[in-house]
Image (tube, rainbow, N blue to C red; front, side, top):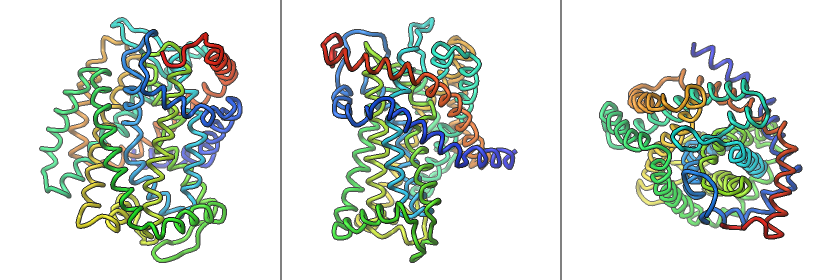
Length: 449
């Protein structure tokens, strides 16, 4: 079974999918006239505004923090390091390109999610790719496919993998028993997710800014401590973006194709643009126009890839740790250790991994729950929540390679119907975005309320 999933994941995560994801972002950027650049500052102001009208369960800020809870994590710590370790510093440039184009994709997902969302029998908002595939595109079967893959993938990438990462981090740092970690982690998860999206958003609104601040401070200190090498580190990124990187130190070398591949792949892994997960929580935001929440949604990709991933990248390139031959979390720890005294580098990365992992567990529960609700109606949602808590416990106990490969396969299968929806609804997106911007300009749509 593991070999089957591994082979399928390798096939599906080939160059064709990266081209499709990146190409979709490029096409949407052009059709929306570069909205991610033109409206970025307005989007950040919207994040902290409060809507007076419109349906929704949580605020713009709560929606953004919940989405960031799912995306800011392993990709920012281990993903960036892996991209640099395998593709050289030039891979960071292609991560930036992926993030910039991914902002248009994230805007489009958020817009459609709000436009085609529904209110369930409990008075709660339900939305996401499954709803715009059914009600916008008219293909319920595509919505059903997405929901099946989404509800399944959540147990891997958002649950067991995160729980196992937390358990390993704590056991290696404190020597804690994994069984005890599993019990505590399951109890904490249950206390939050059984309260629904409002409680999840409340917790995310507290933890996400905190974890980003801690990581930001740590990375900034590392960069400042290697300030004399910062300019050369930035030059390395641009020089190697179009030439590949020769072998040096413990770095084995990388061709231009590898540089582009790993930069794009890890960028998409980090910000999840085009995967269809983030629009599920975007739909829950209280807003009186889809365009407003769409703009808020795209700031998540900016913060994740263009800010947080860049901090990791600059720490790696300026410290020179990228030539050590290490990869993943070990490489990030090594770069942080060069600029932080004592064992603080290891402590910050470990703490970040734990908080990032727990917040991801909470956010992905909501994603999976809404996919499950689409398939089986809201009256059975409590069963999904209880199962989620139990699998968090199991994830802390067992490291299963098959779970990683299963998750990779399901994530690809999520992306395909979502990308079909984005491409086929592109004309509608362009028209409605134009109408939205005209409404803001002439005052028929209030900019912030």
